[in-house]
Length: 431
Image (tube, one colour):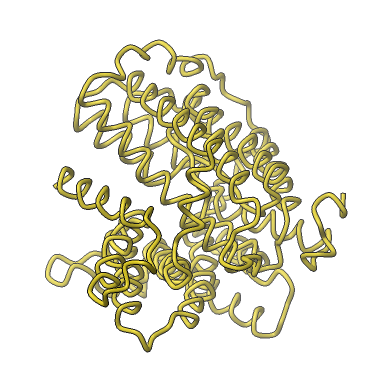
């Protein structure tokens, strides 16, 4: 097992990988609660979606660990499940059964692009500075999500965003968890992020801020209401509306995953000569998970950026992914226990992990304005637009422009020019 996953090469141990897997699972376990709620508003059976979400995460994460040897968890994308429900089903009036077919088709296209190594090629031609910008930008984005989940920041009609109510009990719990985790990390406690979440959950239950589960074991809901429904509406994919939906699933899913893979590989220190090892296999695992998820009955999947929490505590190989998959398997039977993993419990981990990831921007060449502008736009637009894909796209548009302005067109790979034009057309169409 050690030899298969390359423990010695990546400087890890069974203990580190196990703690990393559990930490990542706890950071992304909310998807088992939130995804069924969001998709049920589109008319889907909540119980079936819960089971589909869990099984998809199990199979997708296993593929990621075994095929690509990456400590990354895969599950239904939080951004794309909202797009599925509120934009496609409710906004455009497309039945959820047909929308699920759109997920299936986009997933199959993902697999084709992955097998042909087109996705891998695109990731590898991204300039090194932009890769650092993507990793750093995701760090700011993750911290923003954590601060929002903790209630430390909130929306404000006058200033768009402002400081939250720091007297709120859930927010105080998140602040407590943040301080505890920081202290553990500074004192070099292995697995400090994991222990911080456990301590926060226990304190929350002791003070009545988190409801103590009334049971431990729960029944597994049937997949019957959603299983295989995606195949029933394949002829509808040629409609203009659904083609737009499929393209959006492709665009967001493609670059969300690309951003996560770049960020995780950079954080783990395994990028070599601007190349990401096993990138093709990682992308194939991710795209295969989307196909599996659509058949079972859930929206497009993605590699979860919360995986960075596991890497922060030492995860370096696919063995951590096996642990994540194992935790999702147990979650099928012990679903009531998941209720203690609230936003206030996971928020401190996201804030701290975001800070760690943001440190990647130190590698950017800040002395060259042609590098600084596209890199900065990539970084800042991720949290401001609440989209990793949008930040990447804007950076891709600006980078070739700055190179052309310096009369250095040869320094940009032709693929970057093509993507720049595609993104401009995409934004013009979406607007």
